[in-house]
Structure formats: C-alpha cells, structure tokens
Image (cartoon, rainbow over all chains, first blue to last red; front, side):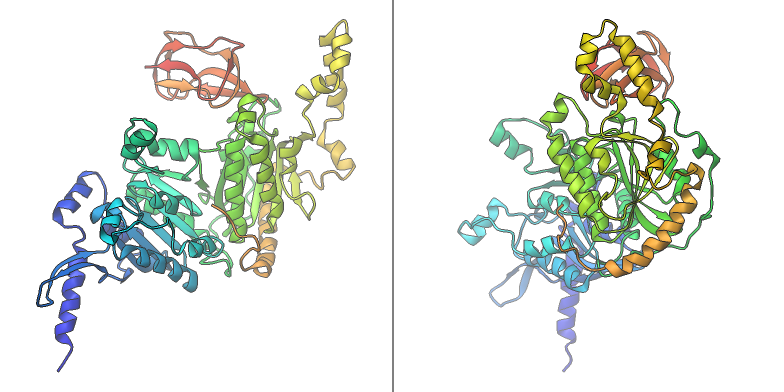
Length: 519
Length: 69
C-alpha cells in the first residue's frame, strides 16, 4: 500500500495554506494598496526560487471522527530563496490571517527562521506586517492565563546581527514586536503611505496618553525615515522596497566569514574628472554638491544611499571602487554646514558598525566643521551621541581612508579616521583644519583684547589676516601633519589603488567582531 | 507649500519678496549655519505668499520660513 493518500492530504493542506486568510481578507489587503505576503516573497526573490518551510503549520479543528474540518495557516510564511543568485532566508508576516498577531504556530516558526539564518550563515529578510507575531490579548483567552513578557529566541536575533545581514521591510501598520523586528536590522525600509511603524498603534496611544492620531500621523515614513531614524530608507512602492533590499544585499557578503563580493568592474579605474578641479569653492562659506562629488569619484552609478534623510548633514551609503564594495561617508555642507549633530552621530554609529561587521572598507570624505553648536544641539545630547560616534570610528578595524576635502575642526573633525592607527589620508588643496575654526575661534581666544580694543573690528581683521597666512594646508604638510596633498582629479585612481590593497587585508580580518553591533 | 529651515542658523539675505513668482529650485533666501551659506530653494514653482523672517533673524530647525503656492 502506498502513501498516496497521506501525500494527497499534505497537498490539500499546502493548497489551503496558499489561500492565506481567504479571498475576502486578500481583497481587503489589495484594496489597501498592499500585496499579500506570498506576492511579496515572489517579487522579492529571483523567479521561482522560493522553498517554503512549515506550510503545514497552522491552527486546526477536527470533527469527532478526527477528520480535519478547518485549517487556518500560520501567519508567518517562511522559507529560503535566492536574491541575485545568493540564498537568503525570508520570513514574511501574513496580515490576512489574524492581522499578523501571534498564534499557535507563528512564534516557533519565526525563531526557527532566525536559527536557520544563524546556522546556515545566510542573510535574513523580514517582511513585517501587523503586530509581527507579537502577543495579543486574545492569547490570554486561549492560554487561560497571562505570562511574563518574553521574547523567546531573541538571543539568536541579537547574535545574528553580528553574523549575517539582516534586512527588514516594514510593509504595513507595524506595532510592538513587529516594530522591534524592523528596528533590529542592518537596513530597514518602509513604504510611503502604505506602511506605518509604532511601539503601539492609535487605539492604544489614545487610551494611554490621550493623543488622537491617525496611523500615518503617528508613525508614517515621513516620521521614521526623516525625523526619528527608526528606519533607514523610504520606498515609493512595495516593489521599490524589494529593489532596495536586493541592492543593499548586493554589496554585502553572505556572512561575516566571507569577503564582500566584488562585482565586474565597469568603470575606468583611472578616470580623472576635470570637474573636481573647481567643485570646492574658494569661498569657505559657500557649499557644494557633495553627492555630485561622490558620483565623480566612485564607480559610475554604484552609490546606494542609506538613511538619506535622517541625520542629513552626514551622507552614508554603499558604493564600489573598481568593483570592490565599500562604505562611503561624506559631510553635506548644505545641512547645518555638514556638522555632526545628534542624529548624524546616531546614523554614523549604525553605519560604521555595519561596515565593520561585514568588513567593508570605509572611505570618508571629510568636510567636518565640528559638532553642531547651539541650544538645540545641547538639548539633544550632541556631545554624548557625538563621542559615541567617535568610539564607533575608533573601534572600527576595517581598512579606512579619509579624503580631507575641506574642513576638519574640533573633536568631531578628529573623528575623520583613527588618528592612533595607520590612518590613510589624502588632503585636497582646499583643506582647512584646526582645533577651532578661525571664524569664532578668534572671538574666543582674544575675547579680552577685543573688549579692551578701541577698534575691535580692526583688531579682529588684523588677527584674521595674521592667522590666514598660516592657514594653508602646505604649512601642515611641512610638519608632516598631513601625509599628502593631492590633485582632486587623482582621487579616483588613488582610491582604486587603495581599495585593491584594502581587499588584500580584508581576508585576514574575517569573522565576527569581538564586540558585536547594536541596532 | 511651506519652506522650513533645515537647521539652526541665521537669515543672511532674502532673494525674493512676497508676491514674487519663483521657479522650482529658485533661491528664496539664504540661511547661514555653522558658517556655511545654505540656499533655501523653492520646492515648487509658484507665487511667494508669505515670508516669515527678516534678515538677521535667528531660526531653529523646522521653523517655517516662507509659503509658496
């Protein structure tokens, strides 16, 4: 006798699982402008590469003869598949089944997925929707008891951040544990308009603190991708979110034991752009387009900006040099002069930790006027967030190079690289540095003389003139305070030479960091 | 639409007056922040309906500077 009858039953249940929460709930999901979890997984992964685990998990009802009369699939769809030919684990919440809230099968499936990524050393993609497997008051009714709040398997998730890339797509209204699963990632993206993120949603907020807000006002992407930094990027559509996830992963190794993957170089390594000759204005008060500078130097079209809006004074992203993946930072002079404020410091920490975890060499284009100053800067804790960022820089062990584009002032300026290690640097002729900038610095150092002077403006001008004479970076180079001042047009060829050397070092540094990263 | 200050700073100069027609990307005013001149550009084409600051005003991040319709 064959097992065909049992196989038929397995097939039948798998088919039911594919129907998710049923036609009505699927329609509601689509009407809300959202894809179902299975559509999401199909669009995220390389065609037809999804292999599902645990499709048979769900809650069931049997009749008195032990025949199945109801099967409701678990609301976490789990499996592995390929992205750009490389295998990843995907765990997607199914909002059409009980709004993604915890049920009998979801939690152990979720933990198993994280363990799979851990043990097989594969990237993990979480597509989070609803409460993301979080507990629901209804669980109390099922269990007939309450329980001490716990996150079984969270230790795995914590370890995972130091081992494999974790990417989170915030795909719907996400609260509680779901929100935590989004935030606990190397890269989080949310969809403008159709996804929201919060610790607790509007009904709980209204009850708890009296605020009466819509989901969008409480936790839309305009808040989290711009103001709070809880997610990195905003996507225009779900497909855009999947494209961003695929792109983010393309720069990273499968795990910390592997070298980041080099792409076929498609750009001339010796390209020298004339535009770099006058990109930085002689007028120190004038800004310039830092993103244009990156385009001119990095491999063409290789820059993928991460966290573009939050902490906008610092630009961060992945890119390639001669096909080799690198982390890139640059100050944006058009946002608070490019200074390091609390949010840019927060962003720097996560970015540098991510690069360090996956052994991506870092290129820092430094035009750092210092920490942001003023009352708001003090109230937001700039100095503490700022030194935390400097710690991230100094703890980082991956190869690092700084291009001293213009300013490097104060404590924040000193964080352009690890000044205690072999800190590779090239300065441009526009470089301008010191523990304090002349403008403002004169006011502080000559306060008494200025106050006593019959003509303070004249004295100020005389002092400025005296200091301007010694301001040239050539004077610094005379003391070997800067190793080399280069023609900005040579930056790309020199960086290509550096990155090739850096990738000789990277294989000697593989494995987890002793201090694993925090989200 | 509202133009807001991207950060703390001082209004250095106004490039247009109330009633002016501006193109998208045209400079409306310049804020000085951390000793860098930061052009505030029109996010849309239209007419400048309101200007809420004067030269020399100190502004905080997110302060509404002007309205364009």
